[in-house]
Image (tube, rainbow, N blue to C red; front, side, top):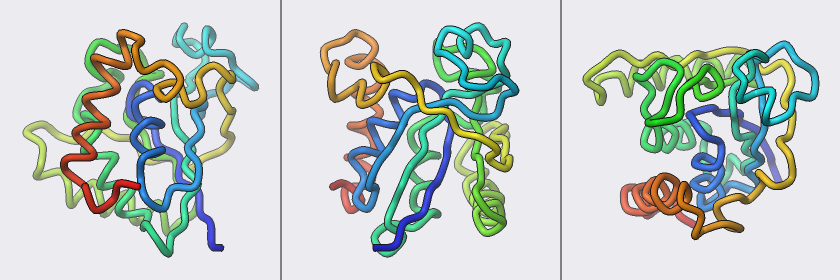
Length: 175
């Protein structure tokens, strides 16, 4: 089986992880941190805004089933790429919109995708496109958070609507 990896940040990692876990062709979605200077940061350190890390999801996928471009199409649907350092009530650099590319082909596809989707938004896309240097897996309690805590308030009012929106808009991409 062919495997590739994508790393995306678009606000709270619980939201992205929950959607990508439901996506056909995604083998795994892991919540974590990337883009900062600290080694092995904790959630509390990342939330302080002092590490430079963003909350991200690292997605392992089968490109024979789902393309990198299709993952980006979902990414644009489930977060607002026009708000700098925030998603809804989540505010701070750790919630920025960012695509960490793993190779030059992903960089080119990300830049093309931004151009393609820019006309879908009334404000300019502020998503960063940067090379992935290091990914740090988040603490165990963050993994599969939505699946394990569906009645948590944040999950019911923030995560669940994003999952439902994805399932409604891209029925052909749902597992």
